Length: 124
Image (cartoon, rainbow, N blue to C red; front, side):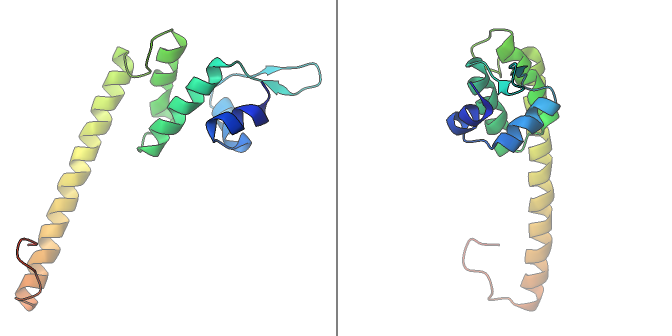
């Protein structure tokens, strides 16, 4: 299939597909006229990349998931390398949550000192 078809099937722009290709996540064959041609299996790869990017993974983070799918696994998350990336990402998210909760407590504390009635019950 051509790049426009892959873009339509996956909801990803042709520009993004070319970007994924530049980073080696998907591979297109070139037709004699120079057009890119993608395999039907690239739909699954692009969908995996897109879903990972949506939840905060980077393109480099997506690589083990794509490699896992290319190796014939049912999901991109079923390989050891993918699981390691997921565990690392989860630890990063947990740390971000800890930082945000500490910031929130600091701001709430400051507000509570200056405005004792500013919090509804259960907000502080």
